Length: 183
Image 1 (tube, rainbow, N blue to C red):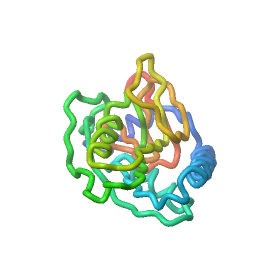
Image 2 (image 1 turned 90 degrees about the vertical axis):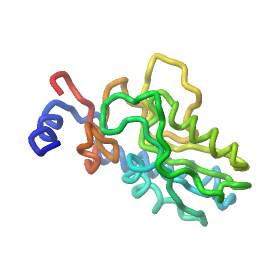
Image 3 (image 1 turned 180 degrees about the vertical axis):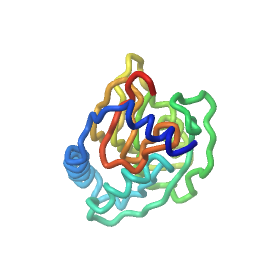
């Protein structure tokens, strides 16, 4: 990994969601989350590392009591295709028992990762599971779940920015970009 490779990826991409659109969508999503769960004292879990930026943008809008923690389950490992084997780096804590749990993630592609998180959290005794994603990828395949809250639907292309990476690069962008041919 190097600077030139990162710049090559950027040059072979196009912006599909502006920073202004990201900010407006997160504010709208936060309002929907407040309406749904502000009385629940939820446990909010951020899926590292992709959801770090999205979480940092969303949490200040959730102006009600909540508890925050993180989990880490991966299947990408700096590639552009998710593998079939999932690796728990940080599993949910016992604090999910009898709680309303909101899981934040950057993107819902095929839904396998979020479904595995949901299944684990519910098996650990959570009272209710909800999910919020910045993006849901539009794919021609049935998914094991749909997000309860979603900022954007994005095309079936590799997208990055706002916490999502392209081969480990560009999580820091305030916009959402999609790879084009040549990347």
